[in-house]
Length: 293
Image (cartoon, rainbow, N blue to C red; front, side, top):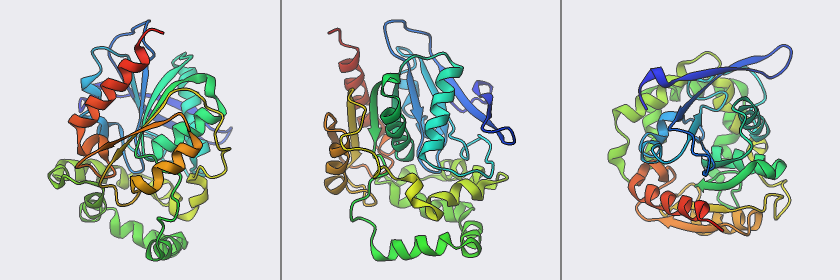
C-alpha cells in the first residue's frame, strides 16, 4: 500500500469557485458476484491507516479506499467540513466509478460519514461495517474535554494549538491514547499522521470538529435511521474516548439491526491496533453478506 504508483486522483468540483483534488486507491479484480468494498479512514487518518487490513482482502474482493477531503493526500480547501460534505464525497466517488452499491468499511469519523450517507441514500449501501464510529457521544464529553474544545474553537488559540500539535511530538501524544498496543505507535505511524498536517489548508479541516462539533454529530438523524440493511459494529474494548458499554446502545438506537462485536486488547483504532482479530471478524462478516440467500 505504500507504493505511490497506486495513487489515483479525481478533481471534485464542489462549487463554481471551489475544487479539490481527491486521492484514492483501488485493489483487486472485479468480482461480479461480490459487492465492492469502500474503506473510509477516521479523523486525521488516511488510506495507509488500513495497511494491515486491505491486503488481506484484495485477492477476493474489489476494494477502493479514499482520503477524505481535508485529510491524507487529498486537498484541504477552506470549506465547511462536516459529515454532509464527506457523504457528498462518497456519492461523487460512486458516480465516478459507476458503482450502484458498495459495502463501506469505516473507522470513527469515516464510519459516521458512512452512516450519514446510508441514511440519505440507503439504496446505495449493501452493508455497513463500522469500527468504533464517532458521531454519538452520550455523556462521555467530560468537563475538561469541553473546556479544551471551547479553547480550540477560538480562532486565535485554535491556530496556536494547531501549530503546537502539528509535529511528531504532538501527533505521538495524540495517537498514544487511541492504541492499547503501544508498540503500534511507532515512528512510521507518527510520521504518516504528521505529514498531512504540513499541507496548505490543513488547519481548516483539522480544527473543524472542535470549532463546529455539531457538524460531526449524528444526533439529528431519525432513530432508527432510514438505512435498514445489514450493519455491524466492531469496537475496541479499551476505547476510553468512546467506551463501548456507553456508546454501542446509542448506535443500536440508530441502527437496531446492528450487532456488536468487542475486540479485546484494542482501543479506538481497533482495525489497526488489533488488526489480526479485526481481519478475522471482517472476514466472518463478509462471508455472511456474500452467503447466498
